[in-house]
Length: 134
Image (cartoon, rainbow, N blue to C red; front, side, top):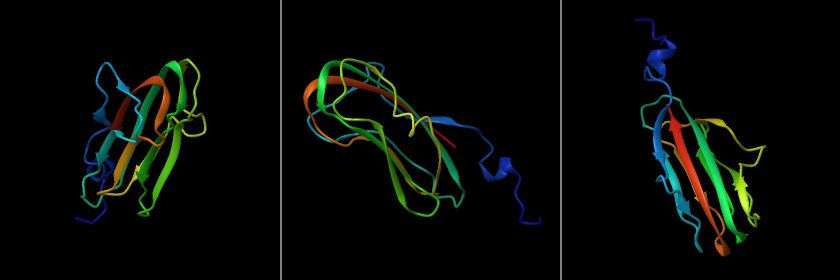
């Protein structure tokens, strides 16, 4: 064997698979900073990819409630991007255009998270999300 892998061998032979998801009713934002979705890539020495889908429904105007995604990059750095800004008005909110949709590279053994970055001190909102990865 020459030591050169085919793309299928390198990527584990499969495409994106669902790794983490919110319940069908979604996850309510709270007066705290909980993790909404998380996944840790296998520590197999291979590069991995992740794609996060998310939607926010605000039923009472928010104070606070920022949602952020973070990923451990192949270089070992943690990179965080805002998904939903704090203080949204009533309605369905799509992710910040500059941040999503994204396919990100993930270091073997690295972690990916979608989390509430600032407490929701007033208002009501629910987030739905899925994390797909290779």
